[in-house]
Image (cartoon, rainbow, N blue to C red; front, side):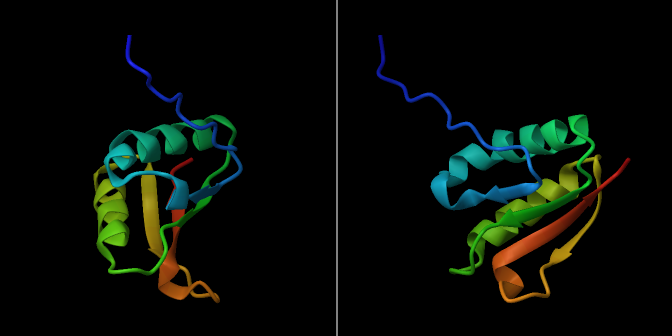
Amino acid sequence: MGNQEKPERVPINGILDLHTFRPDELGSLIPEYIDACRGKEIYQLRIIHGKGTGSLRRSVHALLDRNKQVKSYRLAGDRSSWGATLVELKK
């Protein structure tokens, strides 16, 4: 028996902070979070990926590009600037 960690519970409130996740978890995390938000009728999301080198942001945007539930997304224009992406989901 392996000693696998259970995935962390993420509050479904429209704000997803990726700082506590590994990059290899994003492929399932982001689509599952989008589905969970839509299930709670949350259609505007904020995904916090940080600034860093931009590789995490590019990964997030690639996943959003492929998700049929995403209406649009853009970098946040607030104090986090390009450290967060605002997502609008289809209703």
